[in-house]
Length: 174
Image 1 (cartoon, rainbow, N blue to C red):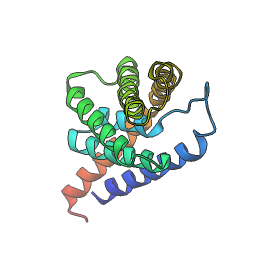
Image 2 (cartoon, rainbow, N blue to C red):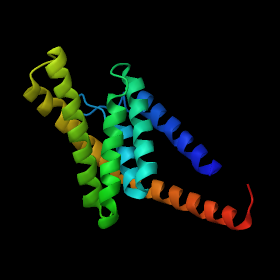
Image 3 (spheres, rainbow, N blue to C red):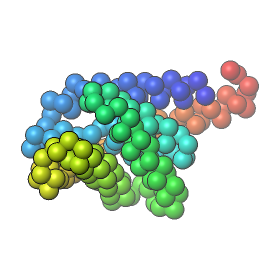
């Protein structure tokens, strides 16, 4: 259990550093990928409901802190998306790349549409249709592409952690 928590915290730190330093520089059409959401979707595909919801909340909180505003909005949205995906994923063949792309694309589409819709309604941000076409759709596509190569390394990591947990619980080593 300690290894699982430490690895989750390490993964959270790596994701936040990559989002803040690397992906903020790598932009396609002026849009950067949402790595915390991509990792939350992959985690939701690989883990059970509670763990994926918690990790989705933490990844969303990290993203909110990186944005520096609206603290908690992305955290709640990422947790809801992760919970929804984890409830559905047991019925799907999740190793299919199409499933990973569809869930990643849909997750960004839902969260960012709600985010910009809230900004549009509350702050008069900009024309919503323009923001949807120029920001939300490219971000969804970019994040879906980035989530694809993340699935295998995270699956291997979680498999090893599960094996270590089973080994230590049989032996009784703390």
